[in-house]
Image (tube, rainbow, N blue to C red):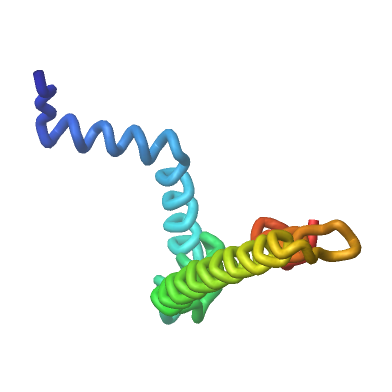
Amino acid sequence: MAVYQTPESKKEEYRRYLEKSGVIDALTKVLVGLYEETDRPPNALDFVRKYVGVPAGVDVDALRAENTEMRRQVEELQRTVDQLNRRLEAAGAAVEGSGGGSKTGKTAAAVVPSAAAPGGAAP
């Protein structure tokens, strides 16, 4: 059975959420600060951003686009690492299968740094 909420109860629930998370207090402080300014700032939105802690001149859309592109590059690089690891394991298996092998006793896969290691360093 679905619970039906009236628009008024949804508004009240959202107001409680904003109050509980401190948003209402933060916005009130910003607006009071703007009101108490003796010289009104030319751009009230920049004042609010500065007061809340967002640096002026930050292009959020550009940062999101850059983030998306970087995530795509990370996925592409991870696929390349995985592919190279598979090739190296196959080459190591072929060498071990032919009776050859390294004098160190290490398998070819042990030479490749783990993708999970920070900075690509070998574990």
